[in-house]
Image (cartoon, rainbow, N blue to C red; front, top):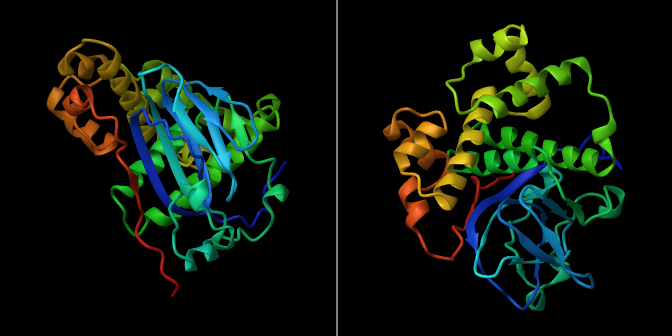
Length: 303
């Protein structure tokens, strides 16, 4: 499986849906491509003409336009957290308006957005990965970028979406068995160091000293292969663990902050709100089952 080299995605929307508890009878369907990850908990995936599939935390699903789907909680009243992006494979698709997903009963196939080539030429969609590796972190980073949209956000998110696509194809095609290049191994080493040490004070100089390379060189490699920075990946790891602790433990916000590497609870709360779209207290206390909704990036205009 491979993607054409001229793929240049355009992001249409990104959303984070905490504590998803909806149980719709009808399937949903999108006019654009979509990527989902289970950020916390477990979900049951239903697709047209297929048996239900259990998706655990970290699982990833990629859908081509026009493929029906439905998510429901796998553990009774206990919901799950879902991250989602909607996109098209080519910038030229941006001349057409964004169409939100609809129920299958309200679907109009004539409105499907042409991706420039048949979906079957890309991959055997739907593409379901039991372990999506770093793709969940990419989706969270894309969603975060839509909250602080700037002139640089569109190409930045395009690169991240491309990383999601190629990363999923590599995992689906047995890419985990492919030996990493020396440069890519160094970049992966940075991410592993962060994953093992995010509870401690971590900075670029410490990572560089541990891996015996210059911090600027390592930052360039991480940007090249993973389309992020060590600092952003560190924050993503901390925020994911903080959200889990706030939902699943009785630790105070200050204790969660210290556990996740923030000795100052005020700083932790500000970082959490900027990255997760809500305060730590609201995440813990909010009993609503309604999703947060999708964040739409700045509208694409045809110049």
